[in-house]
Length: 81
Image 1 (cartoon, rainbow, N blue to C red):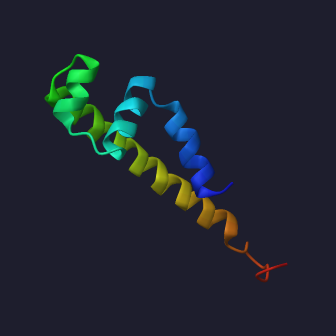
Image 2 (image 1 turned 180 degrees about the horizontal axis):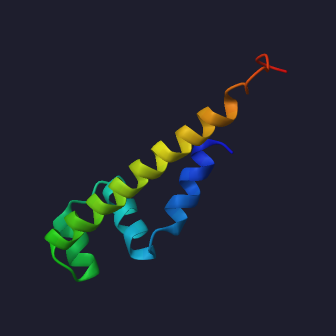
């Protein structure tokens, strides 16, 4: 599994409104604009974005560790064999 494939899966697992907020941030909207659009405060947007990014960062680290462990040769094996 590629790391990006895994992250795409984790992005898809986020709630729709959180994915929408992340897209809006990526598109250059500030938190106040996002909050106004979604009917929530900028503070709520800040908290949700922070938690989503933290979760994605943790997932990314987990996926990297899995990838590293899968790509390491086992005991007694030569790389590529």
